[in-house]
Structure formats: C-alpha cells, structure tokens
Length: 69
Length: 163
Image (cartoon, rainbow over all chains, first blue to last red; front, top):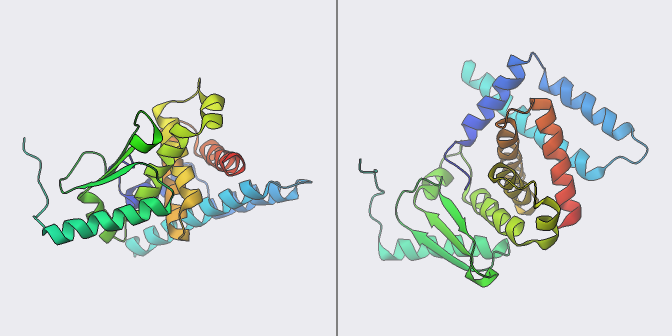
C-alpha cells in the first residue's frame, strides 16, 4: 500500500529533515556524487539512483521556497 | 463512525476506471485479477493481495486513487499502481525472496515495492516520487537521512541488477 501520506507531505518532511540537520541538500548530493564518480569503476546504477533523489529533493525545496514567498 | 464515501458514478464511468487501471497494471506486467471498487479505503488507494499462485494475485484499486491522481501535489495513478506491481515482484521473485527472507519486514517490503515501481514507471516525475516514498519509509525507521539516502540508492541499484 502506498499509504495515505501525500507526496507533498513527504517532500516537506524530507526538506525539513535536511534543514534540521543543517545540511544543504545541493552541496551534500554534489559531494556524494563526486565521490561515487571518482571511483575506478563508478556504479552507474547507484549514480542514477542518487541523481533521481537529488532531483526529487531539489523540486521539493523549490516548492517550499515558492510556498514561503 | 461512518467513513465518507465517494459521490456515485455511472456504470459507464466505473467501467472506464476499471479499463484504465487494468491497462496501466498490464502495462507494468501485473499478473492476476484487477478490480476497481468505488469506495474509499484505508489503503491510500490501492492494495496488492497475494494469491495461492500468480494468476490468483489481486490488485484492488479504490476510489480515492482517482482523487489523488487529479491532485498535482500527490502520487499519480501510474505511480500508485507501479508501487503495487512492485509488491507483486518482491513477493514473487524467488531470488529476491531467498536473499532477503530473514530480513524482510513490512517496511523493507514497502521500500522495495517503491523502488521496483521507480524502475518500471515511464515518467521522470513518477520515478522521483517513488524514490522519495522509499526514502521516507527508510527514514521513518529512525535511520539518519544520509544513511537512508545511501540505503535507498544501493537497494535500487541492487534491484536493477537483480531483476
């Protein structure tokens, strides 16, 4: 079951968790991706998965910014 | 307490809803029976039922799924059905079951179902939505967010390689 939690609530929770930990998601993902891609044989699938999460969280952050304006 | 129920729809609309749900489910290679119930449920909109064999598996879709699909801030019908197909894959894939048998919990199954869903949906926004759902479930277990991100990325990579 996908559950009753709306996608926008999930986005808000994840964005809030980053903020709570004082982490800038953009920088965090950039550093994580750099590390993965610097490996001798980077795991293409893992890089793709990380990019998907990065983009999903970036859209969530943009949405939060729009709402706070 | 009575649960609010959806406004009635015509038999034609009910057939159309079932037709749409069935086309999407079959497009994701769902095997088994597909049904549409015009009631609100406590499931979030859809539910996978494990049958005695694959052809007896059941996908039940409820009325609220169409309300969620119409809301741009919520999961689409495709994403919700892909998640349920994900449950079928997780439950029916022998290699996956034997590898995860002693570690399989309801939360792990939910995470894996979303990740399988993210591998089969066509649209990028549905892929991202299901990745976020998996991350939310992983983070909900008390795992640090950064560890949850690593877990979800690694599991997706593993599933893509294994399935």
